[in-house]
Image (cartoon, rainbow over all chains, first blue to last red; front, side, top):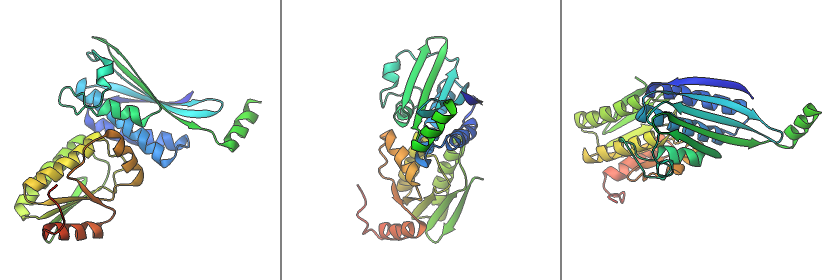
Length: 147
Length: 124
C-alpha cells in the first residue's frame, strides 16, 4: 500500500478538492475515465454525508496493489452520533436531516466494495473500494516483478 | 463567480465554468430564479460541460432549477452532460423529470424555440 492521502472534511467547500483528488488518484492507478467519474461521484456523496450529518470528519484515499488487480480505497471517518440502523440507512429513499436518502445507497452502487461500521455515540466509518483488474501485459510485468 | 449568466434574447444561458461547491450550486439556483423574473426570460440553458461530477445533490438542484423556472414561466434545458457523468447519474435512481437535456447549445436553442412556441409536446 502506498499513496495514502488524507483530507479534512469540514464544509461543502472541502468536497471540491476531495472530488479532484479522487479523480487524480484514479487516473494515476489506470482506471478508465468512466470509473474515475464513478469514484469521484461516490467520494462526493460520502463527503456530503459527513458535512450534512456530523459537520466534520476526514477522508482518506489509498491505492491497493494485489497480484491480479489494483484498487482505490476510500475511508470516510467521523466522530458523530453514529447510525442507529445501518441497514435502513442503505435503503434508497431513507432520509434524515433534510437529506434525500440517495447518498449512501448511491455511493454503494458506484463502488465495488462498500461497508459501514458505525457505533452509537462514537462515530461512523465508511470504507469503499473500486477495483481494476490488470490486463495481460500488466499481469506479465507484475509476475516478473514478483519473481 | 464560477457561473456566468448571459442573456440571449428571451433566453438566459448559465455557463458553469468549473466544479461547484453545494453553496455555489444553490446560489446559481437562486440567481436564476431572480434573473428569470427580471429579464422576463422564457427559457433557461444550463451548460454543465465543465462539470465532471454530477452527484445526487447537483442532479437534484438542476431538477429544482427546472421546476422553479417552470413556475416562473420559463423552460429549462441542460446542455453537455458528459457520457461518464450520465452513467454515474443513473445510479442515483433520481426522478429527473421535468429536466430536459441536449448535447450542444444549438440543439438547446432549437428545443427552447419549439417549447416556447408551444408545439414542443411539453406539460408532462
